Image 1 (cartoon, rainbow, N blue to C red):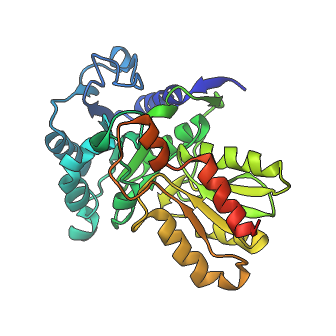
Image 2 (cartoon, helix red, strand yellow):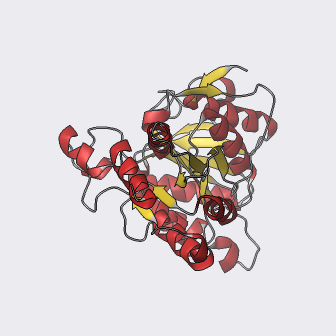
Image 3 (cartoon, rainbow, N blue to C red):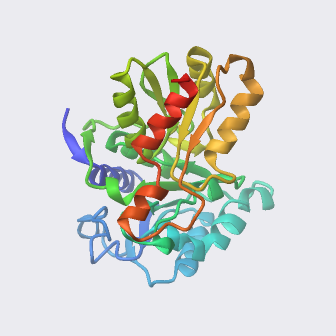
Length: 325
């Protein structure tokens, strides 16, 4: 099977859906003439033209509102944020318009729109450009929140998101756009809300998503050298969350460690911990451990970043804690 970059998988998903459905279009900062801030939309302007690949002003609230209105009127916009840090400027349109419109209109209006772009830390970008908001958006009824970790998942999930009649938040990592992975040439779709067991084991369950899957797998590789076989689960989406797959694994391993990049309070790992202790408490042989970013603004200095962000060493320490070793 061929290998392509994460950005190429996203581009293929959007291009295939735009060829299939003329109501699909892409809008955002630098998506057209510049070929995308991270070259995700490279070449799409040449194929689809200025009416469907649309450069916007640096005005997230404005162009997000245009996208929501277009979706309410029968189109299927893909709104790209250069980073989800900038989506805070548009959060009123996302939450108070897109997410609630179906309910507020008594089912008269669908809002089939995808909000996509880079999320989380990407190096020395400091406090205002290194944040994770997946738990914010996952807290909102009416939204679906998808965070792929591989090119294969990125393409299959984005195609599904574009066809979805509800608004979808689709979060990517800037640090993963160049990652390569196997992606079929034939069309395929992946369901939103179905986690994947990416590594089987019976010693401890490791749950993560997005680029933190790299941390989870690296920790699983290291701990395997000491005789512990970790089962690794990629959530793929954090609204909805596939609790069933998590529960089945915990009932087998009796231990759970969750790795995510967001801050600890009201996080995805906090929600999962609640569900597991509520529904599978009798199966747990140790308290659930969570690895998150430290509860501080993300710093600029590399030495401080290492202290703040989740990493392999902290994850291994948590695994050993639940294993009592």
